[in-house]
Image (cartoon, rainbow over all chains, first blue to last red; front, side, top):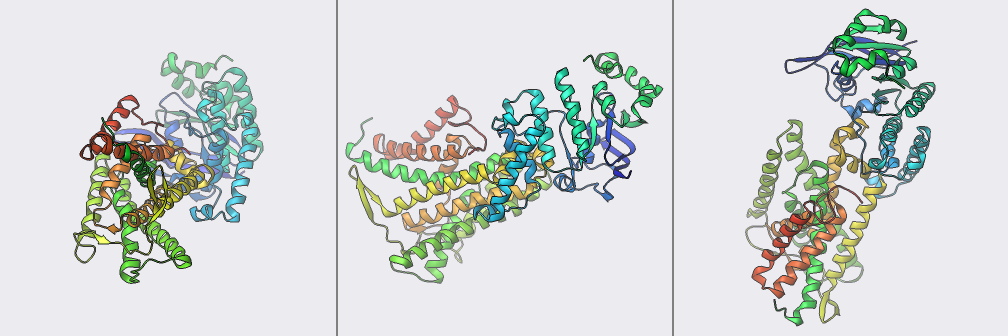
Length: 266
Length: 311
């Protein structure tokens, strides 16, 4: 297997605060890679530096052999990385179908003059884009809500819609930021199947998840962040037994994160 | 209130026509606001640029001094509208590049954008006022389009140019509606207006979409600028100021960021100000119009149709 994403010595500082400290790991093509850690450990910050929201203070990120550090977020999407958000960030007043079409549009070339003149490519891309978006809505299981406004979907369906929109951009690496948050047990099971299906279709998955049953059950490998430092990396069963990992979870207080180490009910 | 009955119908027609012009200009304010949450106060200069450039092209360089008819009129009208639209779109493009994009790069405060917008507006106006350009007075617009009576409704004269204004304005609004709802660029504009960060993380090039927004708003302003110059028969360095303020007001009245709101706001404002001129007195028309605006905003702070770019 070859590395699809290499994160090398990535450090992220906000003013005096060090959110990530020399984080290094690599994700292989075709695997599901879990990223866990207590709240505030720097997981979402790492997503933000991979996707170009904040370029890292120091360090290098290489995707498919090509350095992407400091590239604009939309360029990184064009290269094949797309993500979902911990706090859902759909386009609430666009329909589910339109949300996914925005993602699919990232693959299209039609310019404004082309659209105004109704050039053949414009018509073809619109038709193909709509068909592809609808297909993706069915793929994640919410095809029947295609013409609903995103804001009107249930929480779980909004999370699925975010996945469909990200898939629309045609990624080879999909970053999922707590996709199971707020889902009921049945939805979580369906989500697990969906993530496996996505991986089996050839897309590599980097998954942030607090629900240990979801993340440990799905991931081929898991990395643990604590206070911005990568403290463990390996197969799920060995990471779970790692004393440093147990210490990190128990040390931050049982109230917020205790469920992580023990596994959430359901 | 005692309205002069004989004047009601003609005033209604005048107000309606003016309302369509306001609506065309308002589209630019509303789209830029939707995407950047910025009131582009220099949009009045963008509007003026279309009329002024056509004045130069046909009045000065080609020296057309007599009314045309038939094919040559159609060709010249089409050329005027295209030249005016492109000139205004070009000025909007330039404005975005020179005035706003550098501020965005440096993450300027909201107030810096506002001051820049006002500065850009003054810059353009006083540039046009220079003697090597328009100079301080009104300049007669080339009269190739013979403005004359088309027909009468309820005792009110409707000019041929009025018909043109209404038809073109409606065509523009339909085109924009289609563009916003059914094209890749339109979806990108709406996505950006809802969530800039998410839009960029879904592969949208924010700069390109912002440029598109300015250019599209400029196209409509340019068409409005040419029609305005033809209807009133002149161009002048500050011709954008009053229609600009009115169009901005119309956008707010209808719901800023909202395209249908721009049409509704434009027509309402045109009607209110002209009807109040007849029923209350000409010196009161703007007082009444803006009182209505304040009243509407007290009752509905986001305007009649609400905010947000939608078709």
